[in-house]
View 1 (cartoon, helix red, strand yellow):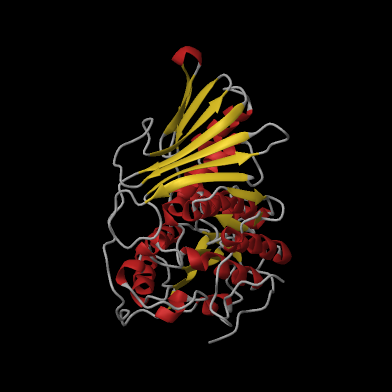
View 2 (cartoon, one colour):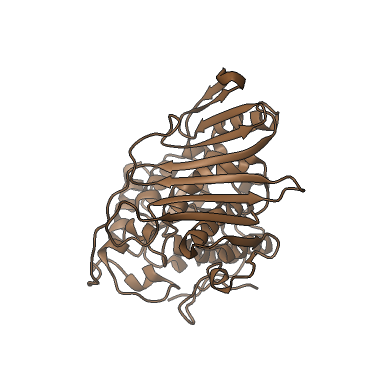
Length: 417
């Protein structure tokens, strides 16, 4: 294995110069990013990287089909980071690799686009912020709602007081997920470097229902659906509530009410976050039912903002509307999300030095809601959190979950420098 490259800065980009990209993680999300990046005239995908060679091969073929030169397909991300011609990497791996890969990339002088949630746990999110700062790298988090025109329009309306003072926001995640079944350890497929896939996580045997995609529902690798999909709506809920710190009190209830399978995270959750806010408390509520094919307030996954003069209801994929006093309809807006717009915002931030719409500090605050909500649900205890020290107060067991255990001596273990 080669060592990770030193922190020599990536090339400064001109407005018309092509960005040389490495894509790390070529599964469902990664392959989608690859198709969109391959259509851009200002991007060249030089590497696709995945421990599963079948994913890497398919990704390289997709780039060729788009009329671009085939990228190198590698299994080890260090091959990508060692190449000084690579300006930036897009990371669409399992959650447990998000922070280690991002930190290594920043230290190798690469800018980063990392899928949501930005980190597997709260401590890793803080280490990512530190890595970006010390290396002066741009990190964009894949909460693309931040680049959605209609979402930004709704947030601006809230800032201008369209429903008065917003005191409570709500996010919901209701959809019908698949049962992952029950499985036993087995041998990994011959095309998979399972040790690379595990990375700095303590070793567990390969198991089919904690591998491609279904890793989301296991504590070692994922963050449940709160981190998988709910993070989008939590991010919008926090944005519209106007809070730019962590909550101080977290209360939760939840469990597996529907699925009989091996997944460890709850299929049903209700979490309440309380923000102190200069003596005037605010509240954020999260509801999750991943066994329900029914829409809430007209939107499968969405948000409500409760103000002193009305309510704003938002669906990130479709639009928003105001309900005023006496249940009278008010202003509304429509639109959808565009992943290419989020890519463009990242490119522009790299080229101009501006802060991207979903920078790592923004992503960390929203991802931390998922982590804190999962901790409160998992421990069945009220969590009291110190927003400055990022520690859980008076509960050593819960505070252990602010971080995680790693494989001793592994080259990708995140470290504070």
